[in-house]
Length: 227
Image (cartoon, rainbow, N blue to C red; front, top):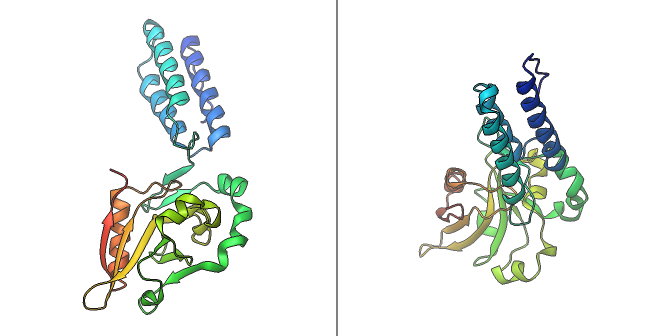
């Protein structure tokens, strides 16, 4: 936040409180985390309407924001540093990636495969793959097929979706799991979902993934985990 100069002592107190909250959560979860945006939104809502008569309202609001920041956690008990950019790509925070996952890339990258119309029939039928739709709308998979019970019982042998997205500048249009099969005519059929804890794609991103698969000549179905 830029320096805010105001002669009103109460307004300055309010600004300082919000600034400290924003800086705290930027450092803890990254500047792109949802909680930072929530606090900034609350700040902008109040700062334009603040005067000495509603200082109690401000204090109550600040208390509410603190409680929300404490209790609104992701399933792994931490805010995930993802955001949606102007191209509707989901971006994973660079600093968070390098602090937590950088060393994993070399372990898995030899099995990161860009799937084409000519190669999509070459992969295991009836099993699932981790996938992303990268920033160029390519389907990229981790070439290690699995059954759901495999990945539930032991996740250690599979990369995070953020690692799969490293060559895409940590930008994806969608991420999740994809099952390949064949229809009665022998053509490739795909069932995909948006089950990614790191990118959390919504229904709109899932539809982008469906369009990308259809361009590869796949009959495509989807399961929406964001609803």
